[in-house]
Image (cartoon, rainbow, N blue to C red; front, top):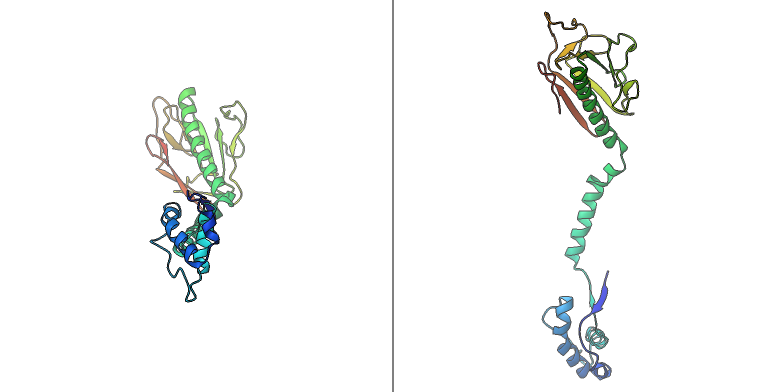
Length: 241
């Protein structure tokens, strides 16, 4: 736990380190303050000589260190205890998260579902046609379609990359739930050409008729260590966290 570093004490008095107890003790005292500037020593050498007039092992060690221009430095018990406590807290609270992929998978799925619903609304507005979003709570699958997907989608929505179908699958250990339930097959909704949300059981709007029974929807995504929610507003269809 201890390290050596230069103390700035010259070697010109090195020969004194080999002298009897009093000389060694005097040399240690004279060099103590110089070493203190580097090592954080206190005021002086206590009990430098024993009853027989011989330098104590501590004084000899200090004189020897000063002779070679090095000082013996380390940590206090308080510093060690505090360091151990900090490492212990990090080990319990932080480190386990780096070894659990579920946290990252839950966040990734949450971001993907939110971006999918926003993409559905923007596509409906840009192409002036309805876009259906199926939120299957049985397996967490989210998909987009231009036709009501009662069973399978007959007209796929293309991904931004041009690929089809547009499907998002939930990772293992991550679930999707809705509040309130969309009360339709596989919990399906759609956005009209103005971006307004509807239930799949609602009639597609026309220039003369536009009735939506959609209520503000809360989508809850739950993982083993994280839970996040997405809200789809009733009138505007705004998708937010």
